[in-house]
Image 1 (cartoon, rainbow, N blue to C red):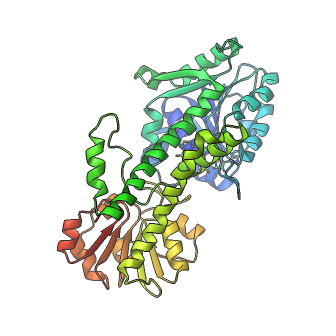
Image 2: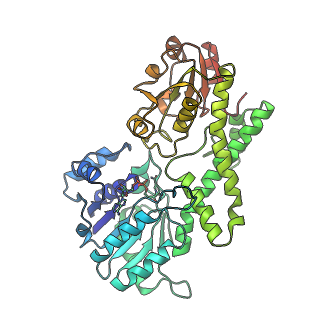
Length: 441
Ligand code: NAD
């Protein structure tokens, strides 16, 4: 099947390469000429495990092309819309200008019977508005939200937990004939994962758009719940990691996403819960999501707490102290620094007078572009040279596995703050470190 993928960022580039590896003939289109050139040369423009291998695998088949020209979308039967929907400056709402621009540019190139499949995360109501503009072309709109996780994007795209199709429906909620035809086309696109037994939920536009933000709100709530418990643990001398283990054994609760620490960040959860609150307000049901305001505040408080903890271990002042921050990406196995808790802590400490050196296995270049005034180092040992305190801010495997003796040999003072609760306190204390963590005694 011929497919176009509009927007080749973290979502679209992986989607385009994955669709080609499933046997489709794919063109990826992006306004960023540099990104397109790199992808066309078979190079991943960002760090995502498995993507370079996938690009190499499909590169030789001739089934994957990249272009900056929207006219190259013509001839594809399914067009995936994968552009960004960031938070609007100064507002909680999503900025839909990229969706609007991409959709407007695509419209002249769609043919009757084509499907435009929206994958970007959008406020509920967006699909309905786009569909009314698409109908005169004879093409159909489907909302097909994406659930991939950065760091696992290739696996999540090729073997998703579930697929969701939001189809055009009639007054009784049944798919229209155009909806049925679109359903069949998407089934052909996803034939391989469907044959593997991937669950498929077919529904209406509103539900499909809500599924994505509901899922992200639930995940954000779960993280903030355990971080709220961490605040209680800090006030009582309890240990949030044991608490999480103990409640996580209850299958109704589950241990995953119950890791207390510096909280969530990235290009999705924070902006998605804020856009969801803003949309609820527009719909007159803001009270329904008032808890998300608390979820957001608990999350942001963790960053402040991390800085406070660093100050505590520096005898009350970080002015003039040398601080090593391990991690710049918002999560391990990614180079994405959008709303990164690690960088937010690093920047706050620098503003408060500390000498901060940041390191990350993959995200230093992105971090430097965003925070050029911070100092950067290539490795943890280099960053920790003569440090008064080391902060573990992103739980990359290589930081989890750090040898306390090796790190202890380069620092000025053996003090570590574990912002992700991934180090063994006994091992670090045995090596002479003052070990502090969020939510642990
Ligand atoms: P991104 O910023 O990495 O990528 C967006 C891409 O769209 C950029 O390359 C940009 O140049 C391109 N673009 C912008 N305007 C364009 C236009 N008019 N025509 C063509 N291309 C255009 O963002 P992302 O992380 O890939 O996210 C994209 C969407 O997917 C967002 O709505 C996001 O919420 C959602 N999403 C992201 C993830 C994730 O883990 N990154 C997961 C699920 C859903």
